[in-house]
Length: 179
Image 1: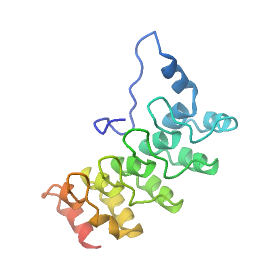
Image 2: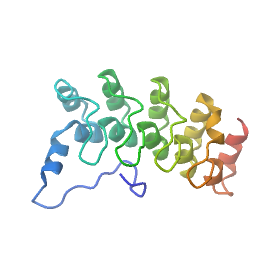
Image 3: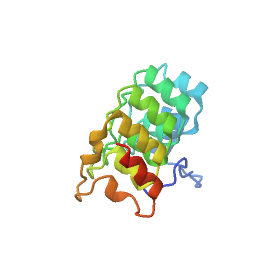
Image 4: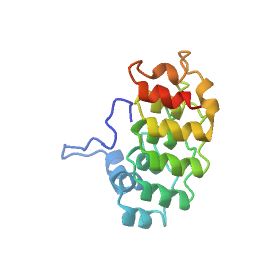
């Protein structure tokens, strides 16, 4: 999904005519992860690779993480979902998607399972960049406790995560000063 999308929402198809990709999505693990349908997800994982990508290049873990579905994330990881899997085009990880939306419990889970907070997407941004951009102070704290080196990483425009924080956000700037 593009960064402009609202966290926790996926556009629904309003047309009666669905494409094959749309029907595959709805029947696949991606829709179950997006909707936090853990019973259906459990059934689908019996015969589906948890790392399969939908037609847009996202895994089920990307959808579950972006929407803050902790139980779906746990289930996917137990079934072999790759914690550092990247989207096909933007090279985003589930950690980046959870950080962007402020899902601190999902961020903690992903970090505990080996998510790399220093990974950069196609724009050179890390999960810390994404969390700072969206003023997610609890997530910023978790990411920095895991690896403070993320503060020195610059994106493709030469900006650190700190550069993305609005100056008036004293709370988030104070979190950064702890590290």
